[in-house]
Length: 171
Image (cartoon, rainbow, N blue to C red):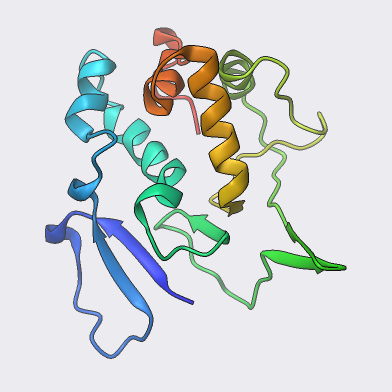
């Protein structure tokens, strides 16, 4: 298994001696760019925040050796104990999803605009976390549905669903 760190070259650190770590230069992503996101959002100061959300969502496309099931986590998240992210349920791999009590209405409104009918499973818990297990085939299907519904690339459809008054409140 490999730990991929997606960043600009100037943010890379010397990790010689650390096994299974690879850097990926975010500037090599051709689907979208920071400047494209910033322009799309009319220069909002939160463009970098939206850009990093898209970097995570698109990882399955640009990290070519990524496994079918993988974990994305924020760079400010540190694991303090061994943690399982997937469970083999009689041959079917299932993600052990993180939950939190944090609920932010603009997140749910964005989700409904992105794909009407897409809902969280319970109103007791929110999905605001700093790490999540993901599955390539599920993300590919999500991209296909969003692109079909909005008639544009996923990143544009994703950003089209952000209300301008909520710039900066989507995770």
